[in-house]
Length: 93
Image (cartoon, rainbow, N blue to C red):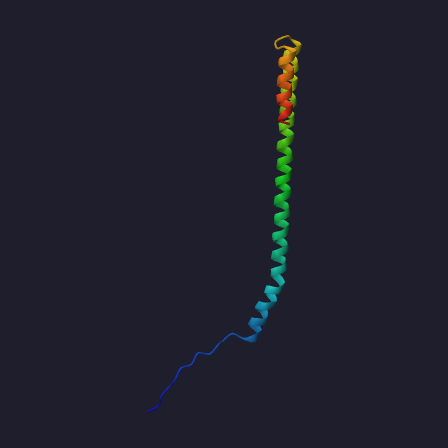
């Protein structure tokens, strides 16, 4: 009677391992550079949005000051009340 034994053989060739290593070496720096570029773009966009928001706030406050000056010029509010409100508006800028 003959006995047979089965052994597993690793089919992974050295070429496949070498190819995987080369691809990892090639694409890892590309991935890191891509991530850095994404981060830089994200923070620059956040800065731009903040500047736009601040600009819009300044414009709104200037329009409010113009309206307040018109009310003073037409005699609807006193000069003291104008100064008080003007100081409050400028405090928020």
